[in-house]
Length: 188
Image (cartoon, rainbow, N blue to C red; front, top):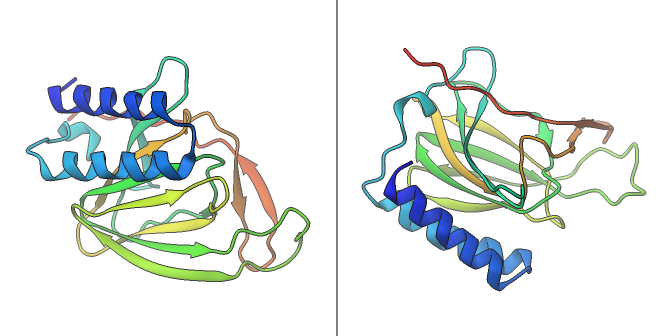
């Protein structure tokens, strides 16, 4: 593990030791991720490779107590996620390429069978950081934008590969629960 990632892990651990407020955590983690993205840090090549079938989630670090995780998420050209939630807080920084995010109003638990309301669409480019989610604001879809694969560094408040999460059907609001799991990088 690189010195930059080791330092970032210690910084995130420090933030989590000082506060449990998701909004404060995401603000402070976003600041630290922005610094990492502007440094000379380079991801290992095998963590930047897309899959032809679907976007991939590569684990970079998972806290021993599963309290948080650091992932590299890669979308090939034209790939997108379904509309989904995370059930935790999260911060995303664009390492390479660009990401188009469409946010939706999070439906209330009693709003079953109601179509989702789009809230906003934004494009994030290399070096930009966004708070992708907190438990009170957590419905979006993401797509690769541009002409190169999108590589993002994601920080989540839990082991995102094992958390049971919601996938939404935008037209009907129907919810299906899923666990994303982790992908293994393929060496060339």
